[in-house]
Image 1 (cartoon, rainbow over the protein chains, first blue to last red):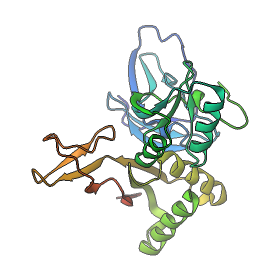
Image 2 (cartoon, helix red, strand yellow):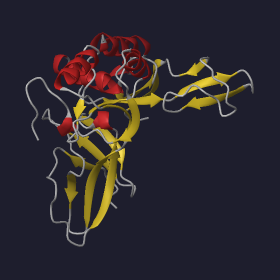
Image 3 (cartoon, rainbow over the protein chains, first blue to last red):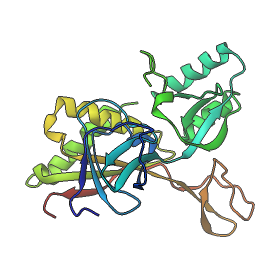
Length: 153
Length: 114
């Protein structure tokens, strides 16, 4: 292990051939994937300094560091989420409008679910509005975040 | 909904509290309860926006830690964690007496060289 922190300015990519290298994992919260500066320890104890200048987000599984012997991979921690399963496009619109009014990021899954991180007041509001929200443990992937100007994988 | 002013207030407070050491701040930790009506992502995004306005803050790490909801059960006189929005103690008694979860506060400040 290196005594100095490993500085990471960008992700090297996903699905890289890591061969026989030892894979160490850096876990972050879902709301930390777009942070420009962050100092954390990997599960193996290596200190990593995230110091990025772009405005992008890390994705789950991104390789942050690659050496002859070692790989550091980013993993996004799961969290309690409010999950909604709208029955129609109109319901999707209504739900996203209600949640969007609170400026909270919305995530759309491949199963056409609407997910947001659990928040007590938001859950209560959705429950009172008759939207039948469920609370489930999920990983919120940045590429699933709904953006007004479209998503970029 | 006013996260930028919240973050700005945090750094104004730190400037007032540590006038001689403000330039040496390396990390600020905030705690936000799950009933604070503030999501960490909104604080993080507001901080990133503030950095654009005030580049001098770019070397500071802002960490937001979420606090779980803790309620008090008056039947067994114990605190319990509210899991998945169930405000019911393990003894079966419902409670809305919140002990933790509504906070939004600065919890830790780290300085370079300390």
